[in-house]
Image (cartoon, rainbow, N blue to C red):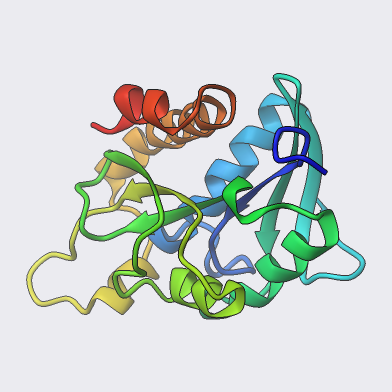
Length: 193
């Protein structure tokens, strides 16, 4: 299968279960759900891989949307399983995740790089053997005062942020569509704020 006809795997990172649904760490899930809503897709449990999956068409491209059912720091196993199952080349993997080092409401798209202390990215790097995949980094900002970062990401967004969150989620979904259809450089020019 050529890279041009290969499917894309778009993985939203988060933690499963209602206790984590509205937390900062789950912004990847929110973006994956937004994309599924736009194409009227429905997530279903994958039979072989611990993930919720929705197979869709997006502007002529086959796209597999996924939300791993493992905890964030174990995301690599499901991601590797989905890459293998759907025969997705690494250059068609897009991971959406929260980013502490970017102000809330800001997006950054990039290809490759380290994990910057993000346990979901670290797990994916360990399982795939590389960091060479696309990342859509959704800024959640730094914790206030001396609050521990691990505690901060597992808390819900502040009330003012909850009002702006739909715009961030929508922009991130737009950025992924742009990345898949127009390429990284154009998507970065439009969405790297």
